[in-house]
Length: 410
Image (tube, rainbow, N blue to C red; front, side, top):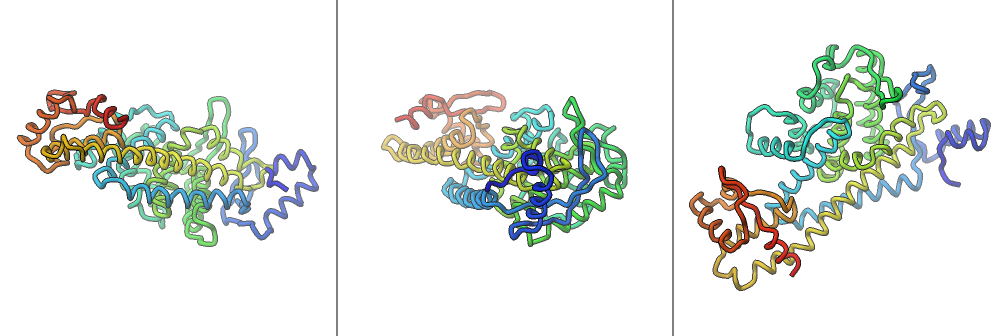
């Protein structure tokens, strides 16, 4: 018999069968009860009934859990095949995609160009204050965020990540979190109301910290349950979605690897309706706190994000043989310095962006050569139409489309 939603069972099988099914789900061998409780929610209102969050480790859920682990291992293997100079720029590309998706989910206007500039400044330790600096910094060091052990850790994530982007009217007015009422509205109706006071917020977050350390629950299930519970608590007036997704990403990064973690928001953004529906179904009175279908949905989103990275890496790695063969050909034998620099530019154009520009100063960093030497090399490459100047002051180059096409298609 298939595992069906409790709401469907209630209407299809009747109340008596429904009550027996709840009892079976909570007390079977594959059941996992969490210490976390929520209030029910119906027609835009909180109801008096409370539910203990639980899930059943169904065959489908176990299969998804295994698939995520297999995908993560495959990603690590593929990353290990990249040239070393490609690895960080490739990760930075994923950061920009993830950050843009996170902003789009929350309806925040940004561009990939703007986010890339902020990220470049962070890498160069530029102290200038810019929008989204906290967001990009948090993503850049996602695998360095330590496990949450104190209530203040949630406020620190908020301060580091989104505080610069929050309107003054929506700043926390309690000691650490909000004191007042907050609701989520989809434009037509209220879909969620956050926990009612700072005292209860702190109490709920303490329970969440304890649950994150509960090793009786599988890591992936635990982190996704924690993500829902954080969104349910809604400790801030604004910024809960972004901090909540970063919370789960930080744990995923330590358990899997940073590439799987960084793609979660990107996958969510491609299927927002699935994500929000999964969140909104949990507090339904007839659902009784069953998180099984929510976990299936979240692991499907995570797995889909991983598969996107795997496909991107496999396609681009298949191009590396052509690149290497091209630069080993006779015309480059006597032009080793030019070949090495153009080879690096070609790899970055393929793996990162075929529209990527290379400032002279960046080429100096990559090659460890002087400005004079870079200008000399680039002049030769430009004369042969392997590269072209796309900006004069400061000078920036781009690998020509014809050169890329000639290497990859021949």
